[in-house]
Image 1: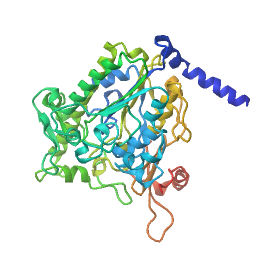
Image 2: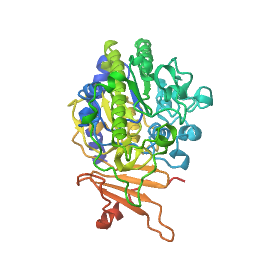
Image 3: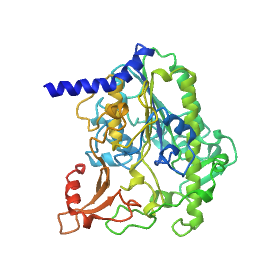
Length: 478
């Protein structure tokens, strides 16, 4: 009992700066502005990336806690967002696909992030892409019901725009053109204003909504979901002009790994878009053009996020608002001969996470602790002084917010198809189904103390490490 009391007092002292800052500016709990960015790998300038210029996110990072080793649970949009909203690892096969939320929400009750906040007095709003379907509807063109996550949001919507429907705005080309599957290229640079592309409309709507929330008597949880840099890599030309394509580096490891591997043939990239006979695997100029377009898309969404943050400050909401910037997964730009996500390699599972709280100690410091998307649910409930539902797998990051030097408390776990992975400070193990006639999984093991990382499967040289990490894998979904 004495040890528990000491730990409780220690934790209370760690979170006290956040709670005091919130109460100093308002008698109510803090608001939450949750910003989701689609397919953004760990390519922020503040993290040392050279693929894109991100001045607005870097400026936010200077006032935030930067989590340099944040990992998602499943490298695809819907399943990653399901794990975040549940605060739990996937336990069913249905949790691993893009229909994870729509197919399983009936079993969640109110133990999901927005519903839990709503139950405890918060207004909850979702605009843009927060669940898998922008606007939260799952019918034809994602424009009609049924709802993807009902009874959780006061309102879930997309902005009125030139694009004809939710699926159109999700994969939008310039000036209201929706994607035609297999007919359109994977990149586009239109010489026009920011409003030529969807994310400027998301930013406009977010700013307008913040103005109405400024007068809200109740605290609010406002989730804003941006689309870029998700394919197609499309942005106004001036964001392409920010980057010298000759200075965009190619990955260190571009060859297809030997079996067993998490490699896949990049179906979303190759089958959904028109390439006019070009293949980045044997066309270096095309590969460079794609990386250039991805960088432009990142810089474009960076500017739109900045507009939302400007409005928050101008409305004097910063002092009592927690800001979270999160991406649902990364994206491989030729690493391991993959153009996409949908694998268990580092660039698919690792994505940016920034958390800014009122009264944050040592703002701008980076935590290198291994953290996961499922940790956000208990983190936000703790910071907002709410109870937790039982059974969460995530652990609060309040300790790292107070002291960025605090190490990881657990590894990061991920799943894709029949594969499972665990990431520690040094190692990544990927386990594949056992070959026919065998009982031991086939494995990949990568040592992140070597350079370049993920260049060689070193499992044969480290059998004890493999045996230990196999015990830390997430359970197989049923």
